[in-house]
Image (cartoon, rainbow over all chains, first blue to last red; front, side):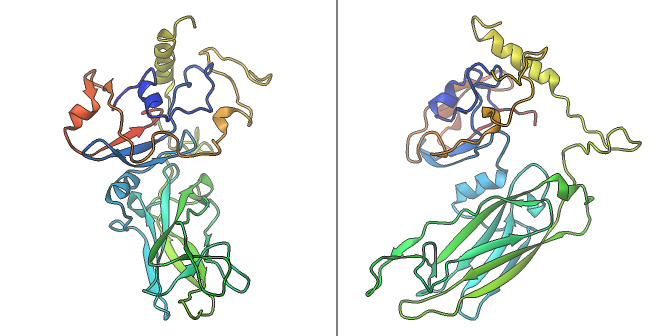
Length: 266
Length: 74
C-alpha cells in the first residue's frame, strides 16, 4: 500500500479526478478509482476505472483482466441452456463468491455461444429483424447498471446497401449489479436467495436464412448477505448492531498532512 | 463556493448541493489516463511501513496491477 500525497503518480498516470476542485482541501488530488495492469516488460495491457470516486472493483475484476477471460468462480450462481438452434446461453454472477451485498459491485455475465455460421444482431437492425436484447428483473433493491455490450462486426450481404451489425462466436454481455439497502434490510444472512430473471431476446441467422425470433428466460438464485453499512434505523435500539465507522481521526490526519504540504494555505 | 455551503470546524465544506462536482460523474472520454500499450511510468513512493518502493525495480520482472483509490479506511 503506497501513499501518493502530492498526487505525482496520479498525475503521471493521468487519473486525477478532475471533478474535485483545487480549493477543495483535502479531497483535491484524489484519483478516479481503478487499476492498470502491467506486463513483464512494464507495458500497460489493460485498465478499468470507475466514474464515481466511491466505487471500487472487486479482486475478481483484476484477476479476470489478467486472465483475459471471465469464468464463473466456485459456488457462484450459474445457469446455462442450449437452444435447439444450437445457441448456448449462460448467465452467471461474477465476484465475491456470487454473494450480493451492499457496497462492492458484482458482474452479471450473459454469454451467448453461437455455433459456426450463426450470428445474432446488434442495433441498428433493418426492418423485420430483431436485435439482441437483454432485460433483467429482480426484487426491489437489486440494481443494474446499463449493459456493456461487446462490439459488433459489420456483415455485408449481397442485396443490402448497408452492412448488418452482428455478433458471432462467443460474446459476453456484462451487467454491473449491486444491492442497495432496500434489498439487504429485508434479508438476514443465510436467508433464502433472491431470484433474478434474465430475459434474452434474439434472432439467429446464417448467411442465407433466419430463424424466428425467440425469448429465453434464465433464472439465477442469488444469495444476499447483510450489509456492511450500519442499519441506522436500528442504531440505539437494544441489541442493534453498531459498526465502528468513525474515521474522523483519520480524516483529521489527512487534512493536516495535506495542509502542511500546501504552502500558503492554513 | 455556492451560497448553500459552509465550512465546518475541520475545514470541510458543508452539505454539498446536487450540482457539486463531488456528486457528479465525469462525462465524455472515459476511462482516463495512459492508454493500453503505453509504457507504465516508473515511480517511487513510500509504503505504509515507511519504506520506499520503486515500481519497476521492485516488481522485478513480474506482471503487476497498479490500483488507485482515494482512501484505505473504507
